[in-house]
Image (cartoon, rainbow, N blue to C red; front, side, top):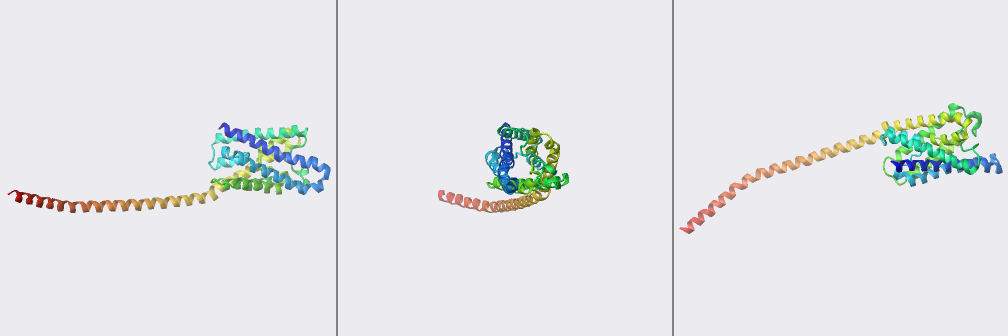
Length: 288
């Protein structure tokens, strides 16, 4: 369990460091040189790729140890689907939160400031301005988390060497859409770490980036468990029934063969006795 906790801690720290760090560098420093209007389309793609690529790398590094959740929403979804225990889920989430804070702390140390650490925001603080009301931000985060978590559950059902790439590309996709609205959370730990160090408005908006991803993850987990995974369960049950019927047929055939052998044995026995009798009579005659 210690190995899993360490993996989740380091993985979440790297996710925040590279993902949020890229957002800070391009939005705050590069943007001041080239201008926001010029940088905005390019920074969206670059930041989205940073999050997707680092998650792909994290899955390659820690996937075989802890599953590389690095996201409380993913851990809760796995709990609902019976892939982990309650205790494991609590330990995972604790490690993820501490790791996110450590990642934000590294960004703050390198940049020498806590004013901008890639915190998630809405309304006038978002790239799209006041049009991103709390309701809109909530719906966007819910949908994006729903898509992301459902993808994670689907591609990790069985061992798949391409699962890391698929999950990383999905995170890139949701970031491309969500960055202008909220900066894209889909991960309560990713939002919590920068918000704790930044404070102010980021802490005021934090509730949404914890609640919306969790609701989206729970909906995705329920859909997968009772609809998508349920079909696989039925198919597996049908296969088991067929195997049982096949085994029963084999048993019946073996029983029939045994009965035939039992019936043939009495017929052969008298023949042997007769032969023996004849031989005995022949021997007696010869002696005489």
